[in-house]
Length: 238
Image (cartoon, rainbow, N blue to C red; front, side, top):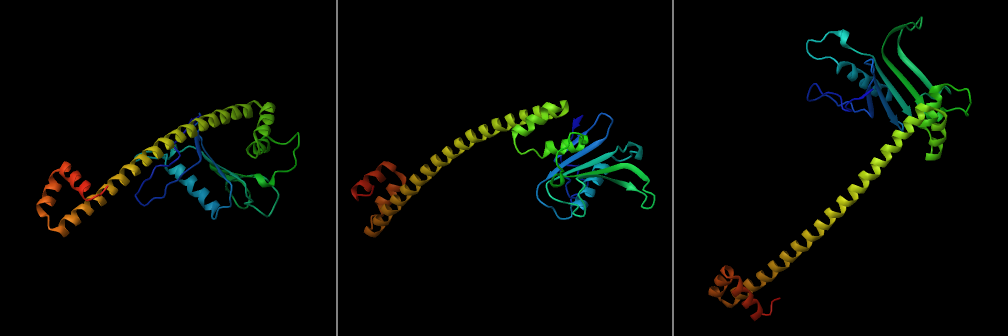
């Protein structure tokens, strides 16, 4: 299995990007897009068809024949009710004859998993429902218990655990980076504030010299910083 880029190729400048959560290619060439969605999403079915179409067309380049197209599957893992008319928690959708139900082609398949419709746990339930329970786990303990019952779930749990550890390292790194940036910003602010204060003092000196008509002193103060300090001391500017 190969993890593919999660942004599909963009053919034209005004094309929309097809952004996928997890996009993989199996050893037999089949591509699968797994996408999890917590909140209800308008036009979800159109969105799925858009992604699947992009996955299909993205496989062909100039001069390629249609035989290069590999099967594409979209798996929607939803934490909202997408089909309110029944209690089926998952369904498989493909292109078929509307009268006979005969499948026209399986080049595109859609699996919709509605976690909110999961029935009470049954020891004899199908594998896909077990995986839905895995996706729907509320805490680490539930994941650990399910991982003990299935070697593939255990493998998935170990990978999740590894990713979680990597995430903790990333957050730790970003925290340190944020600290350094904040420290730098504080120093920059203090430096800028000091410069602004010094500018106010210089302006006050120049104003007094102008009012007194001491133009030669003003000219010399601009050119000679030490003389400028002497005059500021004279006028009590600090």
